[in-house]
Structures are given as C-alpha cells and as structure tokens.
Image (cartoon, rainbow, N blue to C red; front, side, top):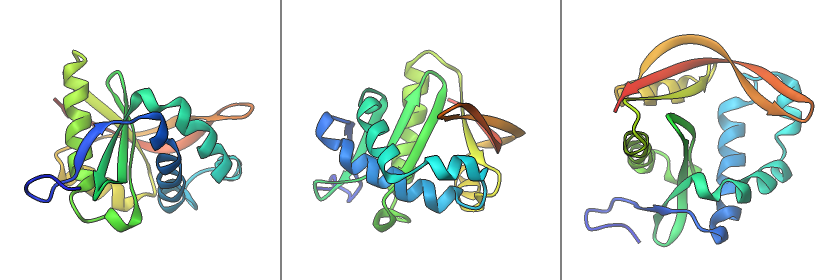
Length: 163
C-alpha cells in the first residue's frame, strides 16, 4: 500500500522480507553488473548466493513496499550506502529516490557528515541516477567485492554526498 501521495512505504526489513530482497537484489545486480565486472565475480553471484546473503543483511536493510509488496531496498552500513535496488516493475516510479533519501538520512543519523557509495564504472543508468540526486563522482577506484577466495577488485566510481 502506498502512502497518502502514492509514495512507497519505507520500513525496516524483517526476516520474512529476505526472499523478496534476494530476488530484487539478484535481478538488479545482473542488470547493472553483467558485462561490467570480472567474470570471476559474475560466476559466483548466483541466485543461490543472494538467497544466502539476504537473510544475513536484514538488520542493515530498509525496504520500500508498494501495495504491500516489497518493491525495493537499501542497505546502509556506517557512512556507506552499500546496496540500492528496485524491482524492475518499480523502476521509474520514485521508489529508488525514496530509498536513497532514506539512506542519506540513516547515514546522517549515524553521525556522519558525508555518505558514499560505489557504482560499477559501466553502469551508466545508475551513475546518471545518483548524479541527478546530487551525488558527486569522486573518481574511479577498485571496489573490493567479496569472493569465495577473498576480495575481487571491481572497477567502480566512488560517489559522495554531504548529508
């Protein structure tokens, strides 16, 4: 169910959200990352890997619901906005904007003056979205993604925003 003005309802994730979060995360990750990350990482980011990871991240997650259905989520740890994903059906509806605003609020509430996030260099759609929201490209760097045998460097851009 949407709020008074049709906006999504944001709330902390609960254990029963993990399956929906995993599916949105898996589909969104594939949409934004395949062809832009090392093959070694793409091979280990299976649907099963997201189904295993999502339940462990419930405490870091805020979900957006529309009509009572999880339409997207954001994960924040410290000053980092680690994940922002919206179901394909919810893209372009304001869900991502609401989630990103919530992430910024959470970073500020945690006592940080600046938030940051990593965007895969080749994900032009996400980079445009963050730039429209006032995030600044702080330059390229290699993000250390968790792989089965240790970190996997992923060519990314660090985006920052005063909160």
